[in-house]
Length: 513
Image 1 (cartoon, rainbow, N blue to C red):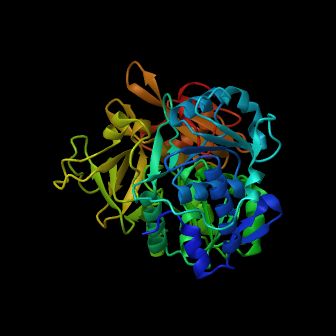
Image 2: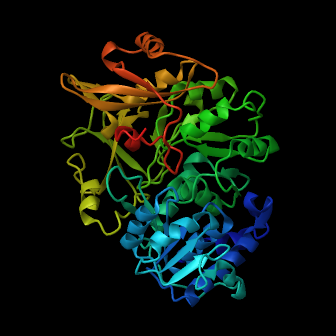
Image 3: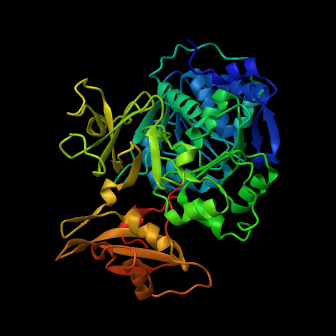
């Protein structure tokens, strides 16, 4: 079994098929044959630096072909990609370098200012610039062009060898590094291809950051495995998305709710042509119902998916016939996925009873990098499974209805317990988004001496619109039980976002905004 040399197999099957459209470099089209040559050169260059199986290679860069080349070259030589979140500060990035101990750090020109914080990282032997080296001793990635485009020597790899250390968002302290193995990433691809019905003719926009599992695994690696095409974008830009949608070339698009909100608020929304799309799917956070309804009104079967860094992130599929009948549901597990919804004692919940979603299958990560305690806490057997299989405890609340469909309610840690009642912020946020003046909303729990916790809504209004706290509370009161109403509503100019464009509730709860 050859593991890691995935591009070579695509070259054998369809060498001249377009694998990438590089919008960073003038919409340059790259065939699988051309891409394989660049990956092989990168792999041979890594070997010349002394990179061996198990070494970590860190990348701090915006989306670009070189980033993808390094990722796939790491898989080829048995190295482990450490894809660094460029939204972190220099000191935070330094802690991650101490954590993973990469031997090579590749940086883009956008992040030279962070380098002084990183230079003292003891493990880094090679500092490599994508362009304009920050120091005379740094080298250029372009040096790889001197190396052969022929495949490097085969490395003995096993299914469970790690390929990527992909860091979770982290709620406190240092983010945890989920170890994504070749098995996990391949089975996510198999699940996606077989469950979502990808074909070699499919093309997806790749503008999710490559330091996030969504950038690597929602469509990019599955499309490589099936022979499709990715339109590589430096980052998410609304006009660029509309340009590509209007080209008629895009069949698949993934985003987080914030991205879809920005698309719907843009002047081009009303005239946009979505007819070429087979699938447009939201993930990363609960998606407010008004976003669904706006797409449905345009004839688009918009749906929500579910996954997380530690599993997939593609885990469910909602059949097309059920998209509007089951709004907000994620559907059924994909082919190689098992799920349960459990109570705190580990026993399975009844129908429509909220509980924690747990997941098992070969797409689940191997654990957390150098953190046995966190691994044991998150991935372990459960009393409701006598086989002793390992289950990932997601920390997400879900329900299963009488037809077997699953719906994600909210994060367990985001749930507000007020006077003994469970309140799910996602439900309140969905109602607030339906108000015509609201652009974005987030609900968090705040301590209360009487009720234990109460909800606070933080709201961004649409440009040119006005609304008072009383207006929004009256609107919510007509749609929610009284105990669910936010105790306070705070207006801000913008909500903080994570590197993956999700609303950063950690900062909101810390009072940063």
